[in-house]
Length: 255
Ligand code: FES
Image (cartoon, rainbow, N blue to C red; front, side, top):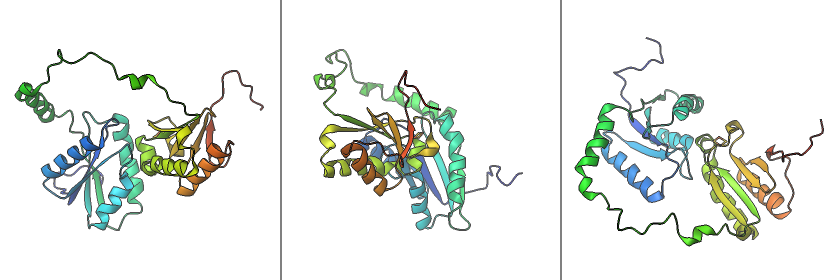
């Protein structure tokens, strides 16, 4: 057996549940984390791989600080993303390079398509069919009138909340941007929203600024301050932070 082959006798001392679910409110996220924690037979933590919460390296560091030496990183999703499952072992190995000596970490199997899990979902659905909400009495609508209004922002900053930017520190980015934009007095004219992966993950954490059409890499709080000052207040592109610029259709590029 190769040293990296799965071993049935291997027993973790901690489990880290990694949930991939882009559209999840804080309340639902917390409920899921508590359910996983209550069901886990050993000490566990749960994080999401998107959004603004604790990211993967921080969670692993935290477990090591609590004494974890054998960590099962268990993907949770119905089903879990194939591309994430392919990327995570390498990202975990990257983190392991700086982990305390002797730390063992393994990536769990995707349980979502296991017959027992699918069976549990199907059976629970039928067992609880009496709780199903009748739809006929509900007023037909695709959304409230407020959703007609695109707002009056002059700038749109899209913060990548994809899992790879999340790994590289994006969870703090949106909060920091909002704080800096508010302190600078430009939050009223700046829409700051999350987006999912746009491609160049290795340059993350990425924000895209429109209408300028330039993408930036913001690693630190100082990068965020500089972005707000230069791009949102002084109205200039920042070549130091920029990592890509969209080419408007028809624009000629000098070789
Ligand atoms: S996760 Fe941000 S660019 Fe891919």
